[in-house]
Length: 278
Ligand SMILES: [Zn+2]
Image (tube, rainbow, N blue to C red; front, top):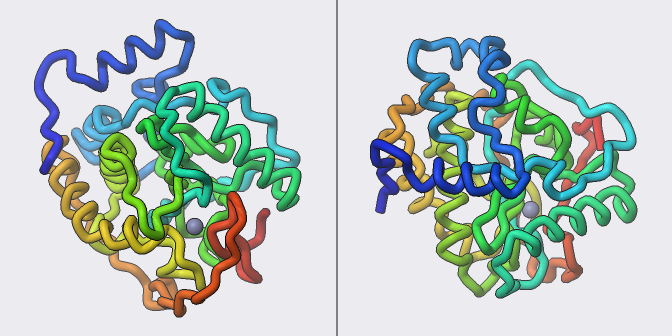
């Protein structure tokens, strides 16, 4: 089912207003001046549609993120892929915003203190309550400018893939409706901002690396999610991107290991020899 936006103050505007009142920062409208660097965003009418499609995003300030330990790398070119992950954390039944913000903190602490990365690895995080958080520093501004913050979430493809970590473990359980709906909205916004075609751009972590991530259940939902994203883009007036994917950039479809290490926060290889940042 497609989430058709209605004219007038829609759910997103209401949510945004409520969140602003509670001290959070809305992404929408904040980066109008920066959109001009993206050739795609310059297309008449497209940049306003991209802004309209932005889900409410909790910035790093909302979850009290630590500053990166080294400068973040931002590429002028848009990513080719959007990689869907699970967080390999418990399937929490705490759907509150507080829980979501703590999740972002705990992932960042693990990535920086245990993995030794310069910041949290993924660009975006979605909680089981459907809250969407900015991950790696400068992600929000980069997306709005059609640029790519290089993260650490998919080995050897971090330079051309943006990553979304979805809270939970979906090897046998299903994500919540709230998470699924927010994921569709986030994917539609990213496809619009970067001029991507959801059918070719949206992939699972296992499409690139030897891992079960994002789990059989969430991975099996991807064909339906791609169609829902296309419908959402159509509803927002976002053109489906026609960028072709160079052969060397296409997924390699490695085999899924039978016994993936089960430890919290680990969902497969996140860095490889082709990645120049951590
Ligand atoms: Zn993953």
